[in-house]
Image (cartoon, rainbow, N blue to C red; front, side, top):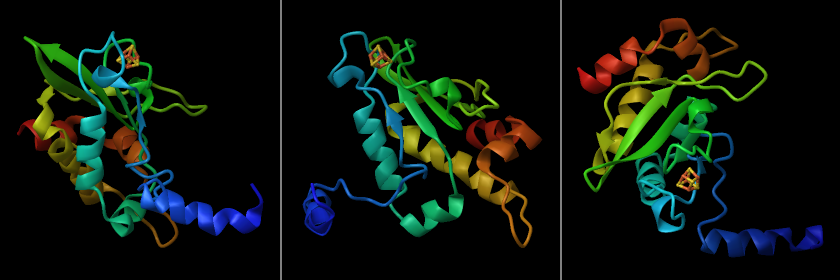
Length: 170
Ligand code: SF4
C-alpha cells in the first residue's frame, strides 16, 4: 500500500472500530483467544476485553493514566503472559462458571518480574469494575513532579499490593 492511501485505509479501519488511538494504554491489551476459540481454555476472554474497553472508553482518561500493560489468558498455559502485565487477568473455571484471578506488578521489560495475585478471583461481570478500583488506587497514590508522573508499575513497586487489595476486597 502506498502512503497516499493511508487516510482511506484509516477510514475503513475506523468503520470497523479498529482505528482507536489507544496504543500503550490500558485498553491496548494482549488477550489470548480464550474459550471461544481455544479448546484448552477455562474461561472466555474476548467478552471480558470488551467489558474493559467499554469501562475505559475515554481516551483523555487513558492518556492521563499513562502506560499500563494489561494481559489476559484464558487458562494457566498463560499464552498472553498475564503474569508479566502491570495488570494480569487469568480466567479460571469454578464449578462450570468463569471467574477471573487478577495480579498486579508484572513486568516484561529488561527488569522482568511476575505480578502478585491480588486475592480471590472475581466473577465475570465484576472484572471491569475491579480493574477500575485498581486504577483508582493508582490515580490516588501516584507521585508526581512538574516533569514526571510515577507509572503504575513504579507505584506497585513502591507501595506493594496491599492498598489495591484493601480497595478491592475491603
Ligand atoms: S492461555 Fe489457554 S486459553 Fe489462552 S490460548 Fe493459551 S491455551 Fe488457549
